[in-house]
Length: 316
Image (cartoon, rainbow, N blue to C red; front, top):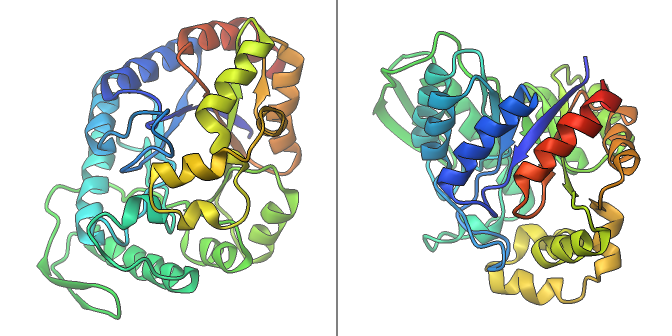
């Protein structure tokens, strides 16, 4: 069954605002949400990057939303044994409502302690080992692990949910897709590419295919385009640069080459509900099961009204 959820941008909004928007999303009719997990925003203009696990606690205490991290990197900046405890706590507070979305991360967030930023094949190895460690810890057993990337000694998680959280995996290439199909409980993406879903299924992936997308609703399309370009020009940065650049300043430098028209090609802007519906439906046509919509900019309340009155009736 196709589902539309709300995407909480930790890069744009303060922690208290994220909790407030989660409540408002539920009131607008959303039953599920994604939340991003970064140490830095992509650019200084975005301006926020809270510790997502505190925010998740606030959402757990004030809503009945199903929530997925979109996505967490459990490999460099925070050890997977610590991530396993954080996810177990979130899952216990949100029984049956929390999914631990994972990915291999970006240099932007993971280099902050001075650790080496490994190449992509090594990052995939680290993610696989991290998932193995976390799943062993979610059994409640005492865990000792001495692997190529991680060491765990006499660790046991005492506060556990009745069931461990599902672990969907972000993937953008063939090797990552194969890993998502083999060890994950779902596939995470941000582009409506049917061949990616088909390859995930061909590799044996049976979990839901889910995607996050951005829109910028406003009564004035020109204003919406300016907002989208000001806040998310980095979405136009090509290739692997988004995994390799180290600081928000570097993203701002690269984003200076991205035009407003280029951003508007990937982020639907303005008040036309048919354009918003078409942008969402292309993900379902590509085979995705769940789509999470992020409203760019400060007018979240306006977007919720738009969703309630214009989008939800059309999409239903």
